Length: 280
Ligand code: SAH
Image (cartoon, rainbow, N blue to C red):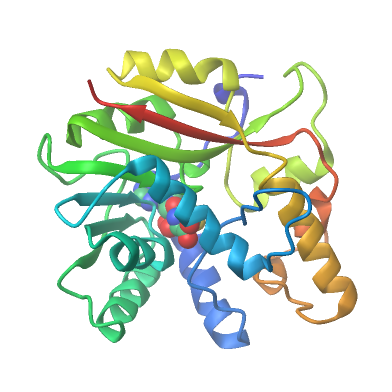
């Protein structure tokens, strides 16, 4: 199955979805500044889901190699949790863009509250057409945003354009871990439908990066560290009744058969890819 065989996300609609998710989460108390999966270094790790979410941002920081002189673009910045962590941990300046106006309002409010509004600026924009000049960033990070973009190749070209020579791109994306001719697990179908996402074809990634003029540094299957344990944790929390809404449940109550993270528990084929590339 190629990208074109999947329903392509429409950026405006993705923006509205995240507006709604943000407002709902603020209303029902499930608001979280990280809108992404966790990263557990090993199967024996006893990190909580919150710790593992921050750990994912730290893994990005390790791969980006930025410092206080750097300017980082956070592509699909959510409500700013990861970007603010990058500012706090590295001293770098961060500019974030999201297609959701509501997320941008929230992110700028959080930056002001943290006293770093001068170093973390969030603005509304579409990754398909970046509103920035050529060679304006030392690094680009994209935590779980590529899955919502209708044309990954175009975004990679835009990323390559705005990176300085030597600048790095780090991203996570979801991909099918089984041959694409097989029928998809219903949990993956629901995820794609309700979260307006497509699954990447892992075979396409290297050619796409190369066509965009980027050099590959690492392409890692981090499914065992991310998507699988995240689904396990969310199911366990829901079972314990501790966080029954577990960050997303209430947000997807659009239909009776709406996506729930439990739909992905144990779904080995729901892969997560961590990519590091560099503009030569
Ligand atoms: N990276 C954030 C948010 C991940 S959720 C975090 O880890 O917390 C996906 C994000 O991608 C949302 O902020 C959404 O608005 C953004 N996004 C999706 N499509 C986009 C597009 N075409 N242009 C810009 N942002 C987009």
